[in-house]
Amino acid sequence: MRFIDLEAQQGRIKEEILRRIHHVLGHGQYILGPEVQELEANLSAYVGVRHAVGCSSGTDALLMALMALGVGRGDAVLTTPFTFAATAEVIAMLGATPVFVDIDPRTFNLSADELPLALEAVQNGDRGVYPVPRGHGSAQRLTARGVVPVNLFGLPADYEGICAVARVHNLFVVEDAAQSFGAEYFGKKSGSLGDMACTSFYPSKPLGCYGDGGMCFTDDEDLAMVLRSLRDHGNDGGCRYESVRIGINGRLDTIQAAVLLAKLEIFPEELELRQQVASRYIDLMSSLGPGLSLLPPHVPSGHRSAWALYNILAQDEGHRSLLQGRLRELGIPCAVYYPKPLHLQPAFAYLGYRKGDFPVSEDVSTRILSLPMHPYLEVEEQERIVSALAVE
Ligand SMILES: *Cc1c(COP(=O)(O)O)cnc(C)c1O
Image 1: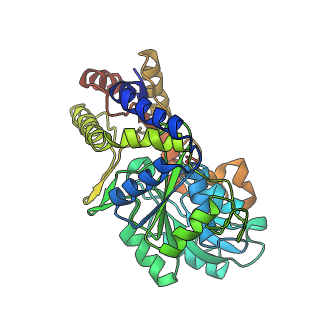
Image 2: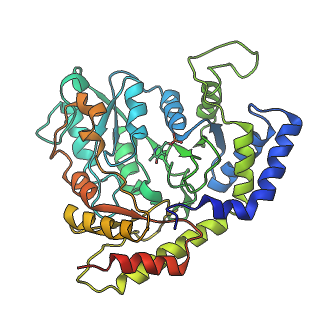
Image 3: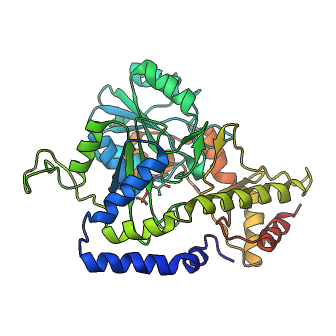
């Protein structure tokens, strides 16, 4: 059994992938070739935004988005501590300060209710109101610039709540959609829910390529122009070797775009299959009876998850170890995303956060467990997984 089955997917579309790769070998435009523009056009239409800018990874997409918004030293950017390191890493790399906001216990996404408290604490430099960075991380008074909500495991965050706060405080909202391509929020696609959005095509993401890749989305023409410049060393878009700003090498490979175009043909169907797999998990687990209390993922009304991962919450850390042991014995792969919230990781120790600062993230990180999830997971496999979990 596989945690994520990329081979089953490849079996379906191998011919098309090879055909498209051969086409790239034929025209030889390996860097920003026609497939990149074709993919950008397709994905911007799919998401429903005016501009899509392909880039080298989800991390670089986030980095470029924050660079385009002029984030730098003295700026605070608010995000969740219960995410992959990249989300906060790019904020720190630009010299800005990541300010964490705890998560909602049911969705595991940034709590819009706590966001105003964190903003007040940043404004007044007052840790009495909410835990904010101390020491090196807050040597100077910070200016809150924006929020980076993460659509964790494929589920969109609470954009209505977050954007309402952002409007009042004049903050940008950059969607970390690395795990949520294809998800929906009240009829709008993930990628269109903030001022900008960033997704990842890392192989195990809902829409993955065969290497690294990512994309930025925005309706703002000026930001899109800056993103195109940033991904190619800050060029001016015309004359080669004229740098008008400091950029990076953040380009998307043409061959990866070709792979993505082939995968895109079956992507809507795969999303539907993921939804079926998730619904089946929920049904199977509900028949376990209340004594086992494996909370299924909460999907608020109006939300559609892309089901990048399927997680359950064990009763406590001991219970989770027991479940992991059972699954391992039966050869069923499982994983923990994420075992340690970012505020407790060495790389972010300079921010001066402490254990207890974000109790919900800390609690969830000790209880969460990811089960196999991909469009090709079979009923019998799911039945085996769920019966393995049925232990007192
Ligand atoms: C995967 C991921 C990223 C980074 O994407 P890469 O393509 O691996 O650089 C950023 N944020 C989140 C939430 C992710 O899951």
